[in-house]
Length: 293
Image 1: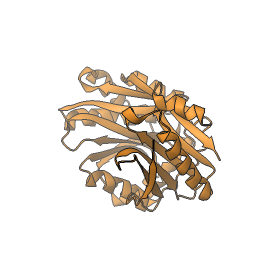
Image 2 (image 1 turned 180 degrees about the horizontal axis):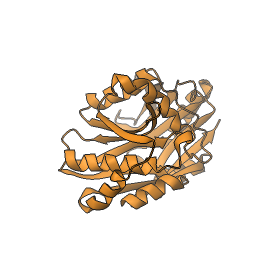
Image 3 (image 1 turned 180 degrees about the vertical axis):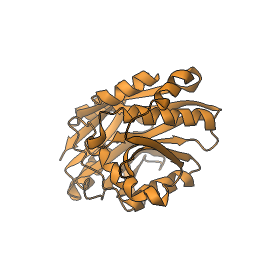
Image 4 (image 1 turned 45 degrees about the vertical axis):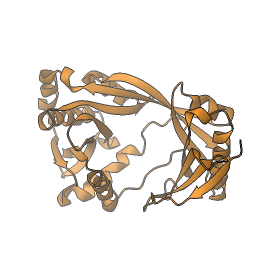
């Protein structure tokens, strides 16, 4: 097949990353595939690039994906990246494609769903109602309140040691501007961001958080963004407590919401145990692949 690879101008850039894009076209000029390469610019991740390659199903096995992959990997090398990561569903054609081209599996994600119609509301209320001495729950919709903004940004370091197996993922740098930028992005696309936090009553600092994004119309499935507790506050059941409160709020505020989705690294046994205990059931698995440059 005569193939043309055209670099595209991608507007999806921001203060923490920029993205390169390419379009593959056949001899007639018809699009047959795309590649997107996100280059992280955050200081803790400026060694890393994230790749997504898509080829039209009827055009697969014709070398299009390989051509796009070669262009994207070359761009990552030119930008002095140390690693390229890409995620694909377990068992999908992309898994064998990546393995054949030198990528190695570094992490498995388990995707699960909680059907809200099946939630044991009484059991959930017992979890929420059980006091955790030294802590209280607070929550907000949308942007973090000014009085909690600094401590909320500081609490994001709770994600720094999340289990990532052999992935060269690095760490994200958070400040007040960044947490507010996330909430603005959710709001601008018409969805709702709900955050529940555990507050250390001794000093008013946030010890942990959990975030949930609900579709704008309050229907379909919501998506958990992240749940984490700072290392010095672990062992008190705060993760379960916050997540149970988040589910309770979703049930009350969005009666037409069908379910809640979450993904967890396979080796994150603590969070998997929390999800299992709350009634989340597996839907599928995805694999993270990495190419070391």
